[in-house]
Length: 117
Length: 111
Image (cartoon, rainbow over the protein chains, first blue to last red):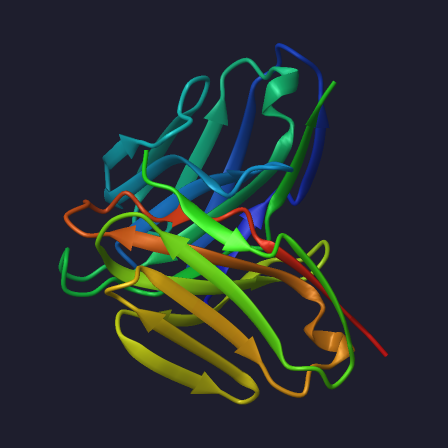
């Protein structure tokens, strides 16, 4: 199994509080992703990183920020949590190769279930 | 927005049956992934393919690039195959911004 861990695995918080989810990898993969999974939707990309201090927005980035100060850690922060951010969050890593020629396999963390009351 | 469509959404079958799950997409891709998610569990990559066919144990994945269609087959299905199966594609020309996912097919295999 790929060495990827998420913390916390479960969290209940109140509207308006800040929340940080951590993704830690031991694979030295360059690419890291944060997705959210909600009923009736496929996995949706929040933010991704293609290197240390290199991040970009995904499809549903509003209300979220990320940071990557080390290769192994990718943090997702909700500055002021809202009930619409209640979801299961998945981190994924990939050693993405050349665009259009190949795409590295994705490895997922176990998920972090966040409930915002 | 490029979509990934899976069918069926839900499938219940008896142990031993041959299972087929379908995935279609709209434009050219560089790779297609099949993923498995058990209830309450994490997501595991089953296959990544860009052409032809791959086989792993009782699982077979095929892709037809011209028809923009892929299938996941399970032979001699077993209750432990019960899971959500997710198709995801990497569109050609895209950057490192991950995959586009289907909504998943919920498979239940009854003993």
